[in-house]
Image (tube, rainbow, N blue to C red; front, side, top):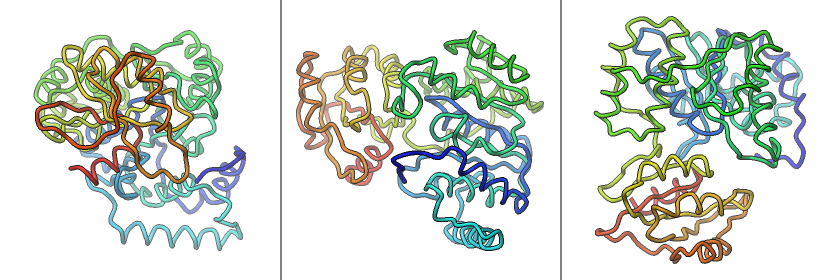
Length: 370
């Protein structure tokens, strides 16, 4: 799953040899730091409701690898996934290529390509970055950019401009941006250099989205994500959009500020930008944060951002074999910020809790405590 060094030419070369086996239309590429999953799924749901046979690739997963492959409103079955895997192995055999050189994520991208062959619309969420991401090998009809902020600095660069550049360099023919997009001038320059038409979504939330948000008690960031999907659908010339939104079901993607019990919310946001959106939602409340983070994450910024809404920090320890956790350092970070900090033991019925962190943390919590 993890490489000490990354060969950015490997997967494009593999794809150039294998692309003849697939029947894919140009894809819709979702790129950004936060919100990619919900923007992509909302857009896929809209496209499906419009009558298009639609697929959505997202990552990571919480419980089951199958969660990454959404086929026209349902998750792929184990048998479909196994059959796609075997067909891919046959393609490699026919072209005398070695599948073992690929990463876990690159193989998942190829599985998506195989499973989604023959679909009308394909929504692909980038993993990390954009320009060098595995999803960037596919022909694109539209690039959709969610907000970009600091994350994965070890891979993408230390500055916001470096991170934004590698993400924005994935744009192709047409790109849609969130109206609060930072570094807009950079985006315009890259679009000009790449001969890409740049569209900035409207500031005003349509009435249908306001009604939907009220119906499902959406946090402000989820309203913004639905609005970005709505604007992308407009670019794709989807008709009767307001009617589609009025009849759209609840987001079928777990742990996006999901209320799983009366006093427990879970969210897979794991950086300061996501924490800012969460703090806004709980701004008039005090909540107990169930938290941990990988060593390469900026836990100090997350705790600083969430501090105004926190009653206490509860360190949630769980097994993480591939990446080290900050378990032993979080208490010092909390102490320096003047926050009460304890090891998590149990859920008390009279307290409110936010489980916030990686997909792995949320997965362990949901398996063990709900």
